[in-house]
Image 1 (cartoon, one colour):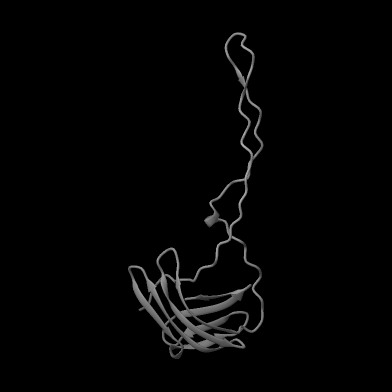
Image 2 (tube, rainbow, N blue to C red):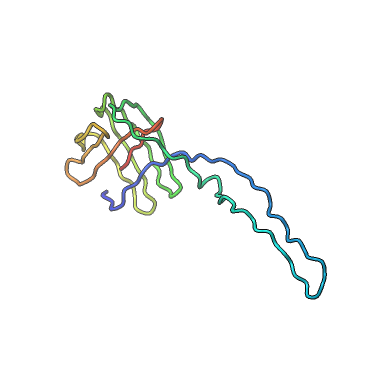
Length: 148
C-alpha cells in the first residue's frame, strides 16, 4: 500500500513544574465621595503550559556510524501503531522489517529485500526498489528514530 502522508515515531516528553505567587488584591481607598479602587500593577508571569506540552529540546545529531539492534512495538497519539525489527552495524542495515497501521487507511509493510541502502552518514537511508518510498534512520542523544 502506498500512502501520500508519511508516518513517524515519536519522542518522550519531559516536563517541569513552576509556581508563582497570586496577584495582590486591589486596595480600597478611604471613602470620600464615589468609591474608587487602586490596583498595583502585577508583574508579568511566565506562561504556564500543561506538563504534556512542554518538551526538552533534543541535542545535535552526531555524525558517526549508527549501531543499533531493536525489536519493538510503537503507538502515537494520532493512532499510528505498528512493530519494527531493525539491526544496523557500522551504518549498514543488516535487518529491517516493519508494519505500520495507519488509522482509516490500512497497513504498510516494509521489508529489507524491497529496499536498497542509499546513504550511511549522517543518516541511514533506505530507498524502495520500485516506489518513491524512503525510510530514514538516525540517532539523537539516547534515541533512534525511524521515519517512514
